[in-house]
Amino acid sequence: MLQLNQVEARYGSFKALENVSMSVEQGELVVLLGANGAGKSTLFNTISGLLKPTAGSIALNGKDVTGLKPSALVQSGVVQCPEGRKLFPEMSVLKNLMLGAYVHRRDKAGMKKTLDQILALFPILDEKKDEAAGSLSGGQQQMVAIGRAMMGRPKLLLLDEPSLGLAPLVVKQMFETIKGINEQGTTVLLAEQNAFAALKIAHRAYVIENGRLVMEGDKDAMLGNEEIRKAYIGA
Image (tube, rainbow, N blue to C red; front, side, top):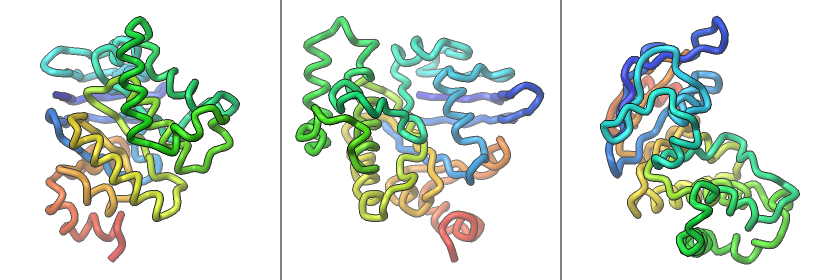
């Protein structure tokens, strides 16, 4: 589904990504592990078109999408849920959700159907749909962020650090929801520092360090890898 071939990205003279080659197959849930500043968000921004690669190529379903605008990539089915949620705190939950459906704004019936599915997935948001998004708890705000991304009807959902700053019980619920989204047919690429929780729901994982992919494997290999355990899970 998604194929990156020797992708490089820069911020000015700084090389933020170097020689990144990876794939995500249709229906997979793939985790991108890495410490803060390792390049996870940069890689996501490059896939979603917010940052143009300086070398290499990106293909989606066999079609070259290198350098396409973010709006064109959303139309193609690539939707990013950013780190830090990036909600509009003064706007209602419902208005925040509807912003995610902008590319489908002419399909009113389809938007309504998708919204109903999101509110069924997150019943608390149905209760709070008229409240300001900024008044919600951290976990509820993350639900709004994921719901807004899902309103774009992604074929490939990029989730950037969804567990950041959330209580352990909320993190567990969040990962169960992400697993459910994947099982319902959405391919997911998940960037996470919380390796243990992420690997438990993943099919495969990549590890990124200093803008380079340094390791890959299925979840059992990663959970059993001593280096991974020391770096991300704890001995």
